[in-house]
Amino acid sequence: MNSSMRMVLFFFGAAGIALLLVCAFVRLPGPQNLRSRYLKRINDGAVPERNATDAVTAVNFDYRGFDTVGEEFILFVSVMGSMVLLRQASEKRDQPLPDAITPARDVPASDAVRLWILMMVAPKILFGIYIVSHGQLTPGGGFQGGVILASSALIIYVGENFEVFKKILSHPLIETAEGAGAGLFVLIGMIAWFWGRPFLTNTLPLGQTNELTSAGTIPLISLATGLEVTAGFLLLLFAFLQETLTASSE
Image (cartoon, rainbow, N blue to C red):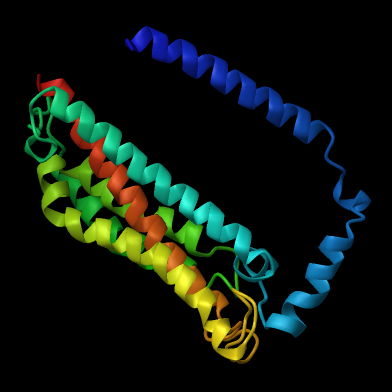
């Protein structure tokens, strides 16, 4: 499929999504007109029942945690599918994916840009860890924090080049981390079985409200999700950059 056909398909897909979003937002009630019993149930129960001050995270990783398992494995399967497709494309060119050649930049990154990138990596990683670990207390969680952590590696590529990006990231280790994150989500859900409770029932001590160890299994699931999301997006970045640079060097 050539680039023109891809752009045509993207245009129709983007137009369809935009139309659906417009239709959805037009019919949304205003904040003063919300009369959802589910909304009231969660707002009234998240703190006294789970000691979680972020109701959204309580919903994602507890009240409807079984649905979130499916969402996480959708990401897992999507990443694996992308890796398989890109590897097949590389095999057709008879050039292994890890041996891609990074094209030289016309204008290398300036010392100021490289210094700024170096200064931003550590705060960005810390912020991502904070978002993952405090999901039960403040807006955030494993999904949001995982994307922030993965983007920390992307800015290294922006400030340096793909060779530095590849040296910093251990590709087999990232694959293992993605599988471990998805597997830990399931294993944490199975803890409830030891008490004869249904899968993903929050059976661990809930701790004290507003403390990092509160909300029982919710922070553990958030950490597992953060690991899976971080590793998944790193794999996608690695694969797409490698594929793009390989195609550019041919």
